[in-house]
Length: 396
Image 1: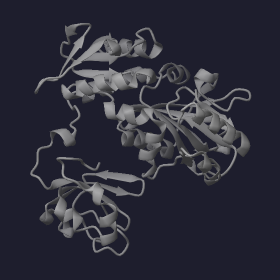
Image 2: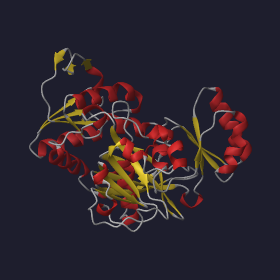
Image 3: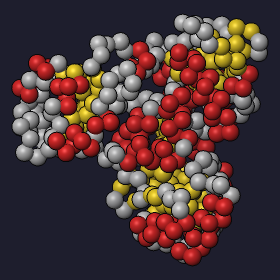
Image 4: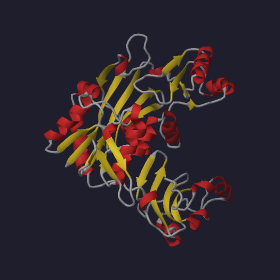
């Protein structure tokens, strides 16, 4: 496998370890500075130039995109995708994770724990928002902060109001988040590769510091995660579109609370405290998946007009409740079930003899008119913008 590691820091620990692991496994690898690419676009021929020379072929790309170059970095990754090169993390996944508000919006519709969060613009909405998340103390976060920078704890409502007013006066967008008291000063970092957690550590803040980031002086210790925490970490990464991710979770009274999902997680802290070869696990995964580049159906799938993807909800008392998928005759209506969502479970390509239950959700591909006919009148009006032709959009 010929691998490109996109990184502006060739001497950084994570970049060096990934390169060493690739070489040890017999792969050809180069570290390429993300900012030295030129993106060329022409009819039917997307191309990349690196340091003024046309880029040679690579089998796979491992992006290590810093927060300060997210826009240009994701543009480069997207170009590799258009050139059918396997990207360990996609441009869309990186973009989703970089914006704290966007990532929580995506996660909030799924059955995963997240701290109660609110986002306001009008200063008159600040006090009601603080009350809705449970009152002070609250955590105030800059939407694009990293490594604990831009994360503040406000002990009182008055101090929270003053901090938010100051940040908003500086044109900063902030989130107001419930303070998970039982997890004060510690969190879990789960390193996800593909569909498993390959390493995990608990980070503990020192002194009066409530932020547990290692960059803030936090101390890390290896930890064996329960199935609930492992499953939560993997699902959070997958929902945001990431194959390789560091998922940060608080240990809440009701279970894991997802704090953040990092698309370029550092290796030094977690390899040091766990003594595991995380870099090797990353390279092995990429080598196993290199022949399966992503296909964006919004761009690639060519179908007759009038077909698309939508989600069908099975309410209690529905005619589908208690029936098998095959007995619903959805296929006769030109509708194929791609995925079944049941609570916090995801069942891809469900068998035809699976019995449907109330509150199941079916992700389907098929004829739009047929799918519209399965929505109750109120839902049909409410969701009219979610079911569209593939020519314009796809609900996924």
